Amino acid sequence: MKKLTLGVKITLASILAVFFSSIISLIIQNHQVTKSVEESTKDRMKIILQEGEAARAATSALWKKGAFDKARLLEDLKTRKDYHDAVIYNTVPVVAAWNAIRPVAESEGFTFHVPADEPRNKDNAPSSEEREILRYFANESNEEYFKVDRENKKITYARPIRLSADCLGCHGDPANSPTGDGKDILGFKMENWIEGQLHGTFVLTSDFKMLDANIREGSVNAAISSFFILLIVAIVFYFLNRRMIVLPLNQAIDSINGASIQTNGASQEISNASHQLAEGASRQAAAIEETSASIEELTSMTKTTTENAQGAQGLAEETRLKAESGSQEMQEMTIAVQSIKSASDDIAKIIKSIDEIAFQTNILALNAAVEAARAGEAGAGFSVVAEEVRNLAQRSAIAARETSDKIAESIQRSNRGVEISTRVSKTFQEIVERIRLIDQTISQIASASKEQSTGIGQINSAISELDKTTQSNAASSEELAAAAQELSAQANSLQDSIQDLSSLVGVNIEPSPIQVRIPKSNDGDFFSDSHHPKRLK
Image (cartoon, rainbow, N blue to C red; front, side, top):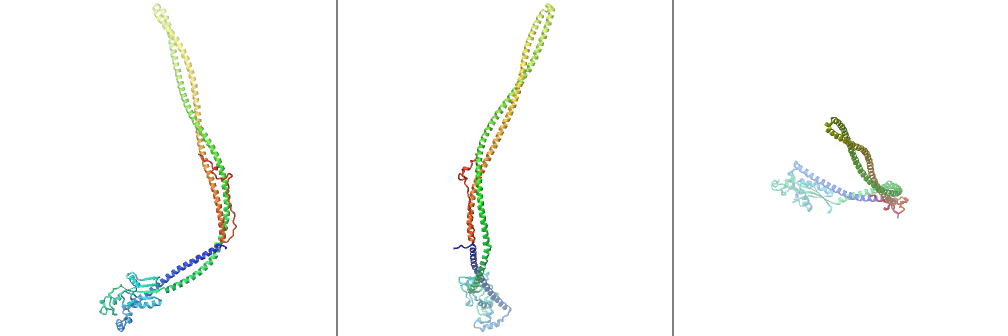
């Protein structure tokens, strides 16, 4: 069996929707017609009773204006066997009201009744339902009563009859009796009622025959209208469906089919790109792994060099301190030797003075000996003394010369020592300067090694981040390949949906083959953990 096309299905669905909508509309219209007929019936009943109330008011106004000859009316009453036939009875306002209501109600098909509590006319005795109406009107705020009894198929409308001032002439205080015996002009005992008291009610009732007839007529008219509307809507919708739904849908199917073919090509390109990206990520990961190992070795060597440079810097610093200390001591020794030389020079000067004194003493001793020889024996003792002084002077001169020679030799050696200590001090100064240069050089080497170690650590961190990025790229490539495969599956599913949709619309479209190859590496799964480089610690 040939499948129905989408246009036929939409048309049938639309017709069914309009059909059921029409049924629902008919139900709603039937309900509205029922309500409308009920309200119309209520309004008609209300108008009839209001016209009766108007007749009552008009009759009462005529009595007040003296339009009726009361004496003549009473004479007429006396000639009547039944007061209902008397003219005066028909001039009673409430009687005039129901006389005005009854013929109109009968012509409209309504039933009219005037129930009252303790009525003078037994025909006006209330039924159980009418007693409920009287109790309802006992509340002075209620001025109308309406009820639709669907169970008993009955409509009831009522309005209250409340005593006015002119009603008290027949129903008021017996002491005001017109005949003086507590009775009214018709011979009924006056009830001593008061103005505004509920006297009874005008009640109109109707069965559902007229209501049902109106409802049926309205429903038939609505059904006929709905049928023609349904027919027109079906015809119009069929042509609109062909032009505004089926035709654009065919165009959309062609467009979607072209898009699915493009999606197929795009998924193939994405798959190839993800494969190339994954291979590049693998090679990059291997290179990063080798670079990482080399940098780890370089880091270890640089760390060792930095430690040795720091140790050499410490030794150079210590040597420099020792050299500076030795240079300081050498300078102190040079100063001490120069002090010795200065003291030796002073001693030489003293010895020279002693030698000069000895020379002068010797000359004086010779002079004294000469003078003693001249004095003869008187100067013999002085001559001995002069000889001894001369001997002492000679001995002092010899000792002074020997001391002077020794001191001269000592001074010569002191000068030699000063020269040597000066050269040694200068040499120590040069050594200290060289050691300082070495210390500065080693310090610069240590600082450079430290900076190099820091830079290599930063490179190591960068390599680690690059490794993470590479691994993330590899994972993204894997996800991209999976997404390409999923895209291919979605494209295949889209092709199947297009075929179903085209057959549903009634258009034949040749399916396009969609195949997406998910490439593998030569050693199996390209995205295995063996291709992921180890993370740098």
